[in-house]
Image (cartoon, rainbow, N blue to C red):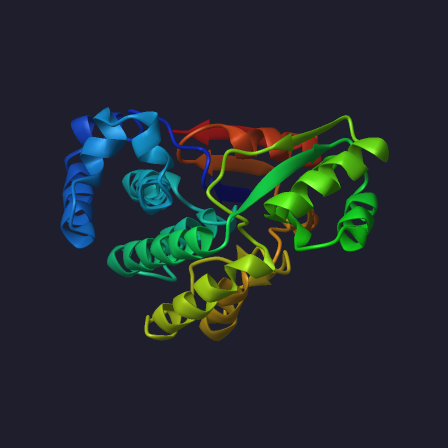
Length: 292
C-alpha cells in the first residue's frame, strides 16, 4: 500500500519549488494564486530569498506547504494514496493533498497558524532541543523532573526525540539527559517551543480559524500527529488539528501504525529528505522515496 508523507518546518531551502514553477503551467498558476492570497510574493522568497528570509515562521510554513501541495496536485494519476500523514505543519499539507481542505482554505489556515505561532514565540522566549540515543520513557521522566516548562514534543524515530519549553528548563533538561546517557542533546535554532503548553495562545487563536473553515471527508485516511491514528471524519480531524499545537508529534507511532495497516511504500512530497530518513529508521523494510 502507498503512503504519502509531508514534511514540516525545517525542510525549507532557497530555490524550493522553482522547477515546478518554471516547468509546469498548472503549478505556476497555483503559486501565483498563493501570492494573491498571502498578500506578498512568497515565490520571490522561496526561489531567490535568503536563508534568513525562509527561517521566518510566517514564511517557512506557507513555503513548505506550497511546495508539498502543489507537487501533489501536479502528479496527476501518480498521486493515489492509500493513506497520508504529515509532520507538524505537514499535517495541513497532507489534509489538503487528500482533499479534506481546498487549496485556498489550506493555505489560509497555514498562514493563520504561522502568525499565531510567531506571536506566541515572541510573547514567551522559548526553544527546543534534539535528544539522541535515549529511550522515550527516560526523556519523559527527566522532563517531568525538571523545574519549569519542558516536554517531549516530537517523537521522530526510535532514539530521537525533540524536547520543547522554556530556555532555562531546556538547558537544565539537556544537562540532565546527557548525564542520563544521551549521546547528544542539541539546542535547535527555532523560534520557540512548538508543540508545548507555551503554544496555548496560538492554539486558542487557530481554533477559531479552524472552526470557521469547511473540512471535507478526505480521499483516504489521514494519520494525525496527536494520536497517530487514521481519521476520515471532518469533526475529528478539526479537533485533532487544534490539539496538535500544544500536543507532541507522534511520528514514530504514526509510521508504525501505517505499516501495521499495510503501508510498505512511502513517498515524501516536498522539500528535503528528513521524513525519508525517519521512516527508514522506524521501519527498515519499507521502500522509501522522495519527490521535490
